[in-house]
Length: 291
Image (cartoon, rainbow, N blue to C red):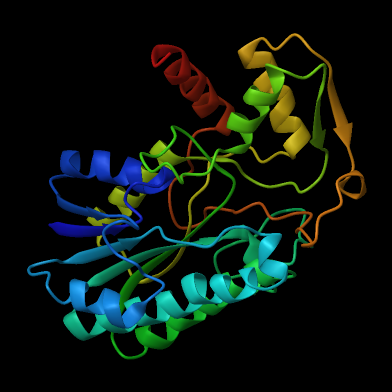
């Protein structure tokens, strides 16, 4: 299958681009230097030049959660998380292409300690979450007209850094950097959710596409949810960090955007992924191998 990956040099996009050929796919991987997706009329001209593409995977998103609370971040979140998704959905539907798009646990309010299933009702509590939910709804609207799509909700990505210089560091990247210069590390002991390893997410994405499952919403995240502090403790244990690890509350780290307090994604449609800390071992070993 010929597959177009948008955001192909980001953290997830790089993993999809590198692993796609092993699934027998012919990959076209475009990043921001190849295509400005914030300018849809211009982007559409280049998209229309493609031939024989059967599926599009969109990893592009505006994910600066706090910046999205005010302008210009709020507008950019709407452009990339909502308007772009709506345009891609219509473009794919008109050409009979399958669209895979990623959304977030932040579409949920965070009031279910037991976690959220795919069919639970979203109720975002910040502007980023609202923009992601608007993108989700646009897919469902196009489904009524015949779009075949997979909407994958995921959360707290970590893994090898993407090829793009603009690829964001993960929580674990940041904590390891701080460990080199700090006398202690602090983590918010709240916001209970799932960490997700990008190589595992990429493999699960290809498996979902190969399965030819029904269109709809799918949750994909590594198992054993935890807080930021809990994950930091596990990182310190596995990376042998010899410094104090202290819990703090959400109130100790004031941020413009409200965060869901419980937003674990339950995988009720697909086989569960391995625990995040098993993937974290692999992540740390890859860091050592690439030094």
